[in-house]
Image 1: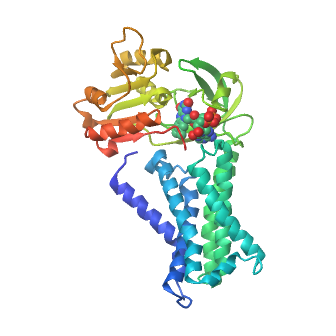
Image 2: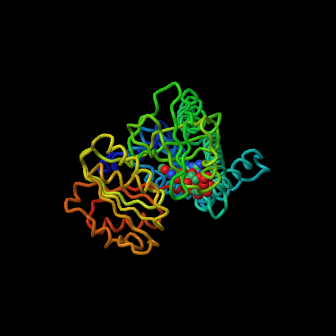
Image 3: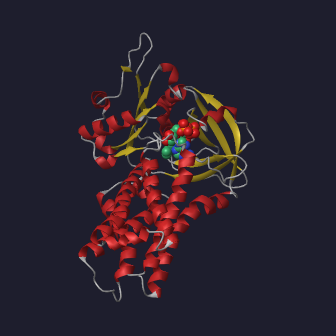
Length: 436
Ligand SMILES: Cc1cc2nc3c(=O)[nH]c(=O)nc-3n(C[C@H](O)[C@H](O)[C@H](O)COP(=O)(O)OP(=O)(O)OC[C@H]3O[C@@H](n4cnc5c(N)ncnc54)[C@H](O)[C@@H]3O)c2cc1C
């Protein structure tokens, strides 16, 4: 996938148009009598906030026709920014209305309408909760799986109550056709969540994988090799990732993203994980014969056929690189590749020996950067810096794609350094393993 300004503008325009659909439904045809500016403004905040919220289901739903156009990191960032914007718009909706016309407070008065007061109070709390738990998930000590479940349920409840509220108020949705149109659009958005969480795992049941090997790697990592059972294994491009569920059924809260570490030509699919928390620490005890389920492939952290590759990787961020290099070897790919690989020490360099082998088999230059080098080390020391990258920057760097994956501070630094070194923004690709 190629990033371009043209694609960005196109997608943003489509987004803006989709976000305006509920407003368009509300204002076409005969309109009710105009109230004050601030009341109409407050109402429009509600419509736009609600549709932005509902649209979150579309691009967080792992749809293959959408995700590759932006890349996972950009989509997650967009999802966060839009979520925060929708939060402010939806909260500003009642606040503006109540300031403009204090009698609107009666919407929250249980004596006037108990169900409506409960629903609107719930939605107010829910929207605050969904925002706080998303921004401060780690500070709140919320396990990722529990957060994801809560996030999905709260989002569904907010959109559902929002639509019912808009229909009950009925001011702009008075003709029946408007209610039907609004209901259809919003039900479509809500179905996307049900599709992602239920329909897709159900379809996946027909495509099981068996664990055929569990191998220890240098650097406290484990590799699982998976074989497709009774179907052709998933086709992927090196650098992409898949969601993995281990166990007898694909319906599980424990679904984690992992990059394909195997060559895209390999019959077996391999994933390598660094032992991190409750899921990855189970890998060393996994047994051949166990069942696995994959959903994917996803991601646009993928090389183009006509460009050389410059990879800046740190620690377990090596997995996309090893997948790309193994594929280049299997394809007898003549392109040039540079791997700048940061690790704490020599004993923690995952795939160390294989990378050395690969550097003899393909046109690969490897630069190890060690924070704590062994005695007598005459390679690069410390962290990856702009000066270091400049030393290994190929003269024909305009013909390269740059891939960055590793610890967050390393990625941020490397991205800025490349930019400062004159690399075009749309030649730099980043993959963050940490979903915050
Ligand atoms: C696109 C992508 C590709 C990745 N590829 C690899 C890889 O090749 N090798 C590797 O070791 N790691 C990879 N990761 C990271 C890996 O998914 C997490 O380390 C793993 O999910 C941690 O789970 P845990 O329960 O063992 O650790 P925990 O300690 O529970 O989680 C550590 C962190 O991992 C993230 N995480 C946890 N659970 C999930 C989940 N279900 N879904 C998404 N993120 C979660 C959260 O940010 C969490 O804070 C990748 C992540 C992404 C986003």
